[in-house]
Length: 179
Length: 367
Image (cartoon, rainbow over all chains, first blue to last red):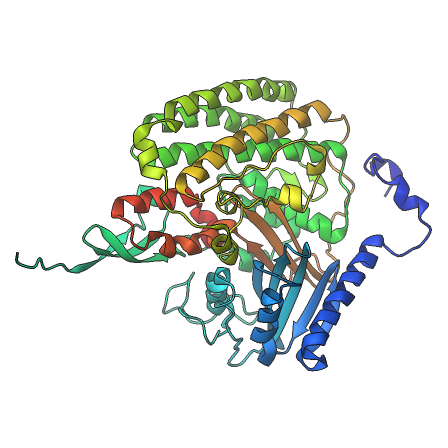
């Protein structure tokens, strides 16, 4: 942990000059989080929101499963928000529940937003948002295939990576890998 | 005149067919020569990289990324190490940053050369393939001298790069830049103005920016529609803000524009390499990082501008030395989704032209 191994100082000085201990990146992200939360609560009220937090510097909102489609739709179609670019969709098995995560980008606001929703592991199901973002079509199929989450409303819900007669969903944490 | 009875036919293109660039199967319904429906079937190369990663330490994941988009392994390496470094808030030595930029841009360049060669081969022109691969060979040799591998480099580490450039390496790359520039003029003379080529690609496989955005497309497929979006400029990472280069955009979003974007991006990559060679400082190439990398508990997403688009890594960590969940946002996989729409109403001959221009790598589609 010696000093000499650190990268040569090219842009560090300003950061040192500021005495406050709060990381400016966190400050900026918190501002963004509050702004987006205001937008969300202004339209839907407290009921739809399960959590609003920063994941590193990324404002992240956990939405109730039942309100998933309308919230995503609002963020896409509201002209002041215009989160029109779907960047990422991922699913994670947290042992107690499964989470579906999307990352959207708005060119109007020049910012990203993370939205999540949860579903129980048994009969896991999250309403499909393929009709809003065609780019999530295969992503939803992949999550169905590897994590066993059903997406009601998806036009073509079948396995995409594994064979049609494959048993189980490999990315689930209790999936047993046979040798 | 008596009616001609036609019948719809179901046909399999691939999975083992050279023009599918690996193992992709496209089930097409054709009415005579015209495609009425197309359904890409993927997964023939699925190795479960994301599942395997859950049992591996972060450094051990790097060689697996080599095998995703195997035409630009350096870029994949960069995606994973960059993601882990951002999550751990690590700084890396300057020289390592420059080495990374040099190899990433060289790799982007040769991947585009492979596109050029194989695309023309798809369209029936043999010669450009041989020229393109001859030039590519030089860069592959550079990589071989640098890290001992021709395709799967495993060159980068969290905290820097594994090896510094050997004696004379940087000079040889410096000499290669003007040579490659002159070669590009040759390629343009050889291919770009060719009437037969233009007939095959102009106005074919067209889509607009809104469609591309809705389909989550990125990289050249998005930029060819005229939409200016390049992560190197729009969400700068590494040290890309220090270089002067242009984002290449098309106009019409057809196959020809995608071809031209590839060609012009080669020149931009050369520009970046040239500047990086000028600015590269002396110094260590590996920073001090903990022996065992533990990403703090939390969720992280960061992406690099891959050869084929936004190459992202989403990490869920529990604070252990292995990721709890690792998701690769693979541009080839995402970009391929539009294929059925693009193929509808096209002739069978155009299938190859359209598929080729999307520029997919099946290792990345299936991961």
